[in-house]
Amino acid sequence: MKGRLIGREGRNIRALEQATGVDLIIDDTPESVTISSFDPVRREIAEGGSYKSYSRWTIHPARIEEVVEKAKIEVESTIRIEGEQAARKTGIQGLHPELIKLLGRLKYRTSYGQNVMTHSMEVAHIAVCLPQRLEPMLYWLNGPLCYMISGKAVDHEVEGPHALIGANLVKQWDKSAEIVQAISEHHGEATTTSSLGFILALQIK
Image 1: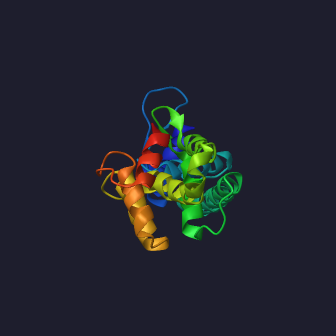
Image 2 (image 1 turned 135 degrees about the vertical axis):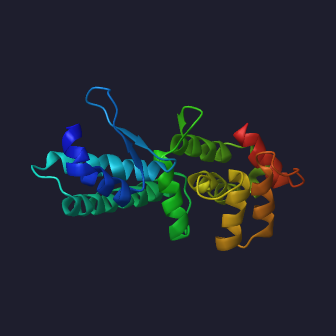
């Protein structure tokens, strides 16, 4: 298996790494290849591309590029579906398509041993269960939660804490100064000064 993945003079493994943007680590561990990357989506694509390449009778760089491209399409489709389902389950409508994709990417993220998509859904449901006296504010909560959580989908690509990254997403797609402030406050990276920021921080804790 490892010999086929490496290929003559390392051509196959170089093609896989170049096409997927990951590092493939092949050591003495029996029947094991390590896929190394900070990007969980790239790891998923590389895993699918490696498996499908190996399952073919012949492996060569041109075939690898073809297989990896198909794996990318499959993963992108899964991301879109997962993002749409997350928005639907939390009752959020009219989200920007790019935000839908960021939500879907959370399927492949973990934080402190927990799947980030699962965590995100739990936080969103807590927002719905807030006391009735906060009802006038409930309309605002799920939107900020989506942006806030989406920051975790890109925090390995953009320098800075995910709370501030999520706030910057709002500047791009929502334009609401109130929500920007609340999101930036929710994880202690900014001083909490707004009621909405306090509520968001409370849900996370």
